[in-house]
Length: 340
Ligand code: PEP
Ligand code: MN
Image (spheres, rainbow, N blue to C red):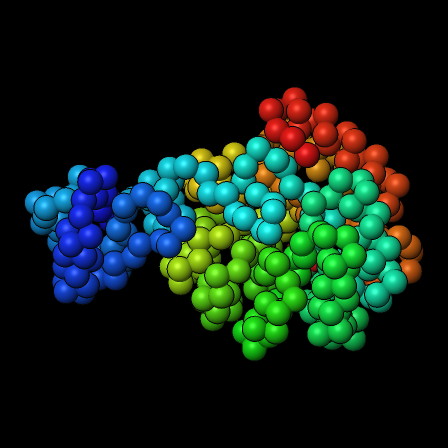
């Protein structure tokens, strides 16, 4: 349920409503990033729903009370009809610009990361991606450089000015990753790691939330809800392919997810065509389809020597191929009234 106050409602009237929400056992929530005078009532509304609507409707300063039928409340367009624009340094994700984040799957060395960072920046990427904590299927595979990898990413940012998005896998590492990163990435395998979602929600850092491999869009939004309900509305959703019976590609890009999410939520939507296809040859076409379908950004793996990459070489674009793709993407973006 949301309580929408009159634009002229006084502080006292707003406080009286939030106090009343708490008094009857719910959690009043005013998102610090939301300008409108909207108080969300969080908790399980029961059969008293109709009475509560009437009760709050009669309080001074209240314009109207609305029930949100979606399971996700703060992520819904009823609560926040306008698109959320997530700010990352000078970048805006969810605005007119389609933001491309590119870089290696894993940070492997300073030289590798800085070289790729310069290359993707020259091609028009606005953000650098790279993993320092890697969720690998096998415990014997390269697990990432840890803090050293984060230091390298910060050095690459210093050199190129590109903000950094990197994965955090463990609640215990969140503070550490915050020291270096601009955007905290929650990987597909952790989409429903609720303690981790709560922890990143408490940081106030922008979060890139990747869709679970076998998760429905409604589950993705419930995970976003965990982050927002901690007071952090800076959430970017990311479609990164789901499991299907089709085995010609690593996963299956759910292009449908873009219009559905844009309908259901105000949060920006990015697409990762690298992990969804698992094959560099298919990354470009899927990236173009995503921009045409309304994605607010892309996450693309680029490596200067894919054959020797410590992870995900087969799906990594070489820098020249990436630069060519960016030129094509600019034309697609213009065709749908966006910019890259
Ligand atoms: C990644 O982006 O580095 C990654 C591991 O992606 P995902 O969690 O989508 O597999
Ligand atoms: Mn990868």
